[in-house]
Length: 484
Image (cartoon, rainbow, N blue to C red):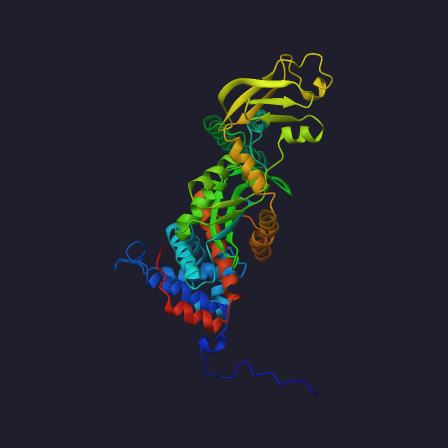
């Protein structure tokens, strides 16, 4: 037969793992980045293995390599990572023969908060210094990620319903026990049935105790929803319905599209996230961005004005149409006269200043009221108040109007259009790599650790696409991975 010849499995070969890994393989860059980070950071006294007694610990740089490699290749499970150390040539080369079990991998990941935070900060400094990224222009976006918890969250009502069902089941089992005890028959079958009933009652009482504790937690915390497996998760609404999870924020720079900051939050939307995201970028890079943009979910005018007022940062964020603007489109409109400090409606009626500095939703407003609404032909369309139509005017409305005028300009429209091209694909890349994933660690702090690994993997993938591997390794070898 005219087939290619196979090598004999029994053939003795003198070969090293290093010769089996190509020089342009991404695993070499992962190895270099993690190794340099630990060599140049004073972690030896903070981590396991600094004492000479007891069992030897796994080197932290090797554990970091293992996890970064795992997330880089779409493997988050500690059990799967353990298997890879036995069968994956790249992993064997990377770990230099070390084969930690899944418990060791899981423990390291849970305890690596400081390491990952400093690792990402150092890596971002490298990207900025080598001109792969810029911190001048940053785009923000958020996504909802499912927590490590059941989709169904508990409420006060559902807990009460479950407790009633448990009490009913316990009563039925106790009745059966009483019935069996009243018989004098000592057959083995009856004894087995009694033992089974007692075990069922024990499990139900344990479940009842947990539910009662969950009910107390909901009452004390003031929350409406509660996930027993991850008590810090909040109820979120996504394309697949409602689920417990976290709202993850990222800031992506516009040059290389690297993630400059990632934050795990428990807010159900992005309305209050803008200022925190900007502060996080400054903390990570040491530089305040000159331009930031985001979608309408971040259209908090007070935060936008505060950011623009504090420094040289310009915001390009479209605003959500207000109820008043919607009514203006329907023919009910009001014109403000600065000289008289009053509004005039479309019917020529005056709305005069009624009260000053009224606080509402974190902002201050002046309230204007019309005393001529009686008999107006559009009153039913304008207001349901019997005393007359009122309007709130933000005390910073002049600045808000200036911002609205700015974002209608050609440059602002261009920045708003470019936003999707910059910030949408990081989440898409992560979800394509990991599939329809949910977090594996519990609690907001641990969830932040895990998403830091996703961020590190994504940034490494972006870096590999920026230059040949040989050039990247040379630049990484010459740099200092020190914190900002």
